[in-house]
Length: 83
Image (cartoon, rainbow, N blue to C red; front, side, top):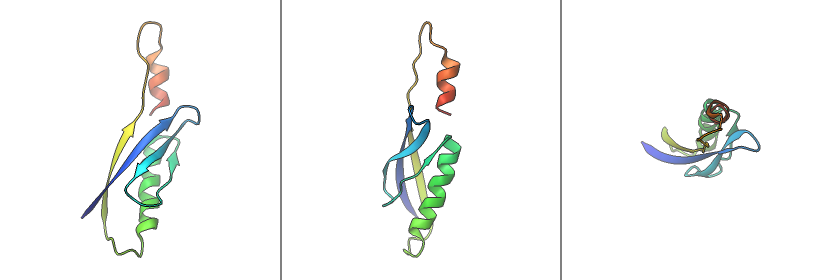
């Protein structure tokens, strides 16, 4: 089975997860939540690979997000933005 890597990042300004880099050519999706992003990756990859003879593919998603922590920072608000 072929393995592809998708690097995901969170855009704080837009409030979405998006494909930063992908081994699947032409894969450019986003999602409001990480779960929505995962579904969009699977659906789009299936469409892109259909007819290409690739068969089933295992996609590893590597996610990148950042949060601030420390005195006077409301961690609950910051973490919920990246879920």
